[in-house]
Length: 491
Image 1 (tube, rainbow, N blue to C red):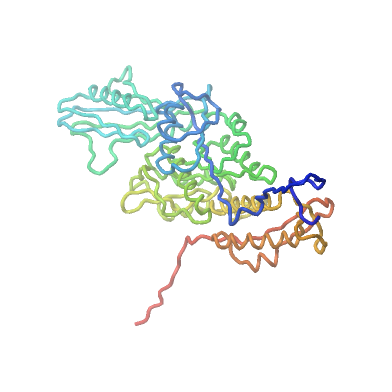
Image 2 (image 1 turned 30 degrees about the vertical axis):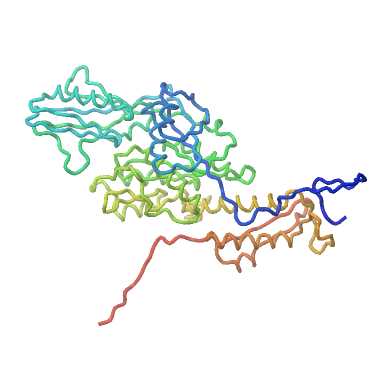
């Protein structure tokens, strides 16, 4: 019998018409790659979900209930869902490090108000407005500030009037750890906002935070679940190393559950370059916030959400010009110049720009990978699009052969067998690869079919007769990032 039946036995003597179904040829075209995102961050005691429990989240309000209002995770979820409501989103909460210290900062009021007005304060990009009456003393204004910040439960810090200097408001990060040092404090942000006459408010930047949570428990909690995009709120060496190591393993051929982590960091161009130069991973991107008042972990969540949404549509299309809604732009004096951003892009740091309307836009997303094992410059994994495209090519290749050849026999080219036999040969497999490449080509993921055809290798393994080996040499499509022209005019 030439036909390879899956379920109908060959020893039937009882009369009847027996029909089975075979779905191996039912799926046509390229498969859709389901994206799943993971938000990693700290929780507050008021949250209903314990630490290290993978939890699916579908809204910012749900995240507040699960992880506590004002928690790092709740803030990350708010930024995420402002950009992306379609990607399946999960979160794993972390408790504060018992050995950690919370960052602190101060707001010091001096003078007496000589006019009524509104004092606009910003804590991690969140605005707090304080009504000031003419004649209000510095102590009265300080008390009003502490009360207003205390009433804003979504803010990343709590506030209290200092026990000695009653014109000083002490702010304390809700979480222990280094991340709290990046909580931006400022007075006035938008044009027209000003401190009521007679008063001054001095800002003491957040500092002193130490001891981010250990990520070993997180890695265990992630298990073998596939997370394509991960938001990491930390950029300390220990946290980055732990995530880089896990992602390197996930990208390997035995697990093949690749993912990419996004983090954000605040600081000067020199500090950002030093951070980028200290890392070298193709699986992590660090975005420089460039003096934005927005929380670094919210900034990272916004970038990751945009990537997850648009990469699922087309992983090879660049992310430049995509806006980050709700992310506050740096003051003009704090923005990185084109020269500084270009330097950052050579140091493994991703960049954003600000348009004429004050929106923050993605400029270029790169990985921290800059050098190969010999320490020489290697741009092969520079752009995030490269990794995302490779991930999709592997996924679709695996899906194609798993769907069409799930229980096939393997034979040499030239073997004679009936047309209905479930047998795969290197020549048939190579033809399948050509067809798959053409579909990749139609989707705008690869180019140069002739090169692929000339260099592909499909052969039976020399030591294992049950194994078919491939070398697939796709030429990945590139992204239009730089346009250069010379106008050679004539008079």
